[in-house]
Image (cartoon, rainbow, N blue to C red):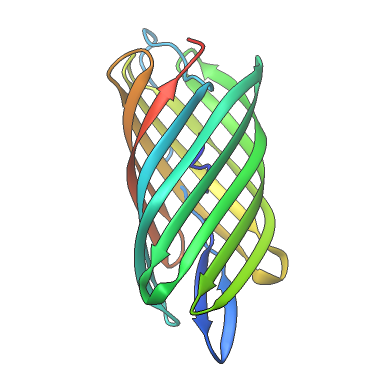
Length: 210
């Protein structure tokens, strides 16, 4: 689910001597397909790490950067899970952005291999550039689907909304594909798109409690 999430993201839109402001941005994706009845449903017990690339292009700023993210999820009860994640990205012009999210979610099976997921999280952002630093926090919410197309292949898609109060809000899409080589290890691709932001990456996921 997360992100990668959750997380999952807001980026520094304009960071100049005459004006420092945040421009909100999110991530999310295409809805997943239903799966054959032979596979089991998705797991909510895992931790993961990923390399990520972020490209921002609007009428105020055109920058790109790369970094990493880590996160995890644990199932608390039959239909509830807890998750958290942290990411750090280094952009052009010395702009650095750290993102933290932590929250909980509800999941329920629509078919034996397809789950509906709803998540709510606290989100915190810390940015720095050229001796300046800014931070902001808010609420993130997302709904989506996780689908096991086979015992080894999972597709997931989410619609995400982030509200940072005076800094603004953003709706975006996030999609993921995970391939499991063993019961406990998978590699995956993720892509997210907001109004002016494209984020993509590759990562590894480790399942436990299976």
